[in-house]
Image 1 (cartoon, rainbow, N blue to C red):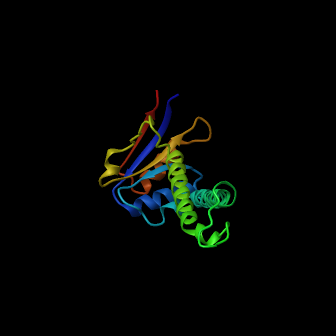
Image 2: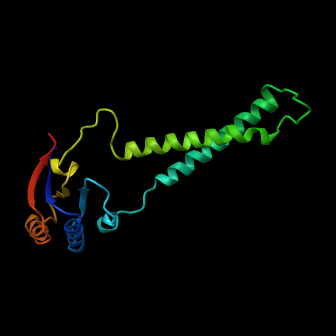
Length: 174
């Protein structure tokens, strides 16, 4: 199903930020913004919420902690008892290095997987490039055109008033 987009290109980050803010003030939802380098304040201007990747890392880290401690305790106490120097079977202090490593490993792998899935960067995903200059020296704002409640003329007027170098419509999809 083809999707229609309105793409505006800007020459500098100040006019880009002004354009994004004006669009949000007038009730438009910004689909995405493409910049050649990070722009301070752009996430606030777009109205983006804080990322939930930290919660994924925390959950995976806690799972890694529980799995590592549980497995080591099971092996040391029930499955493969060894009397090493008279220490008790469940000497938790000896489990700390492995537990730390497994916790960090699972947190890192889960965060990476969640990030790639959220960004739709899985094998077979097709890249969509709205504006070629955004990868080098340009800035692009993308609005998704919807059949309801989208005034393309008003959006085009706002973008041009904020200093857009070019505003065009693009259709993506088959």
